[in-house]
Length: 455
Ligand SMILES: [Zn+2]
Image (tube, rainbow, N blue to C red; front, side):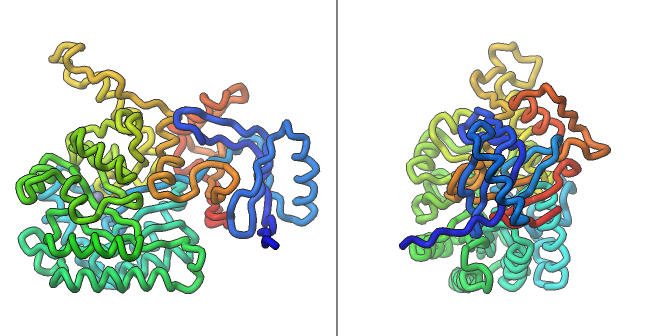
């Protein structure tokens, strides 16, 4: 006998999502049934004739959630690149080059997370803000501090955010300050193992809402010995891996010079590329690198806001998607100055338009263009939801049976907002208005795995 999960509740209202890249699907006055373990068990469309009978049954049990006429249910957002400890410096020092920004601002700030009280306050604030912005899944870099990174995991589990978290490993004395680096590759590996064990045995985490991630900061911060150890650990534990790859000219050039091969090839050689690897940025990967990433099924965290400040380049998202690469969006807090994936979705559209059109009017139109680069609003929304879920190999990002019910309620009636939905708007128009006009003020309720975590 198969044990069937009991339906926990049902949601009645209008939902928008993009299960197919580039295509908006509206579920008008649909009934979404969610099981006890947070998975979507069924999606009944209005036309099915079953909606009112089933809705009555859930209403009688007191487990029906009814959306208002000016409310829209959306899948929650997936953020593939967050540096949790950098939250206090959001929006500052964005005029410095990456390598200077790290040494002068970022490493000294991250070193402060040896102080657990400081970590607790900042991490609580960050998780709260991300949930308020509709981020139901986040992939986090912590710091080198085991205890502080454990606190972040505790907070995500308690608040109910789906989270993948890495204790950062970085041991290269030529690139990392003396007060903020692992004393040796061996210690970095042991601490990474300790973090994996901690997260996997957290009380209340049997469903794996919070997952550990192997996190070499990036090749410039790590010795070859450490990178090799972490590659072996990834194979042994089957954990996700996250790191930076070819973010800027400086990083791309540094790895070429040190390793004699591209960043992507070097990571592959260390055993760090797999179906569960997320590479942040990837702006300067070449054609061969793209093929390598696709062959391994690894994903890219496209961080369009941060790329303006620290990469001086636009990631060619459309070309990579068309080649079959897994791509989602990242805020790159605090390289990007917004905690909102919606902000990054609209910036992904803008950046792709600039890449396609070219930006220097002194160069002739045909010479400055890069044709077929633009992405549209539905594709940006797909990146923010389904694309992130696929990259992480998690069933999130759309209202499809078998997926987790991670969702947000957009409320168009909130005062002081830029969102003006009109009764005659079709699904495409509504989604475009949400991408370009909605923000934190419009996000009313947030659900993760069928549990209300905000609102
Ligand atoms: Zn980063």
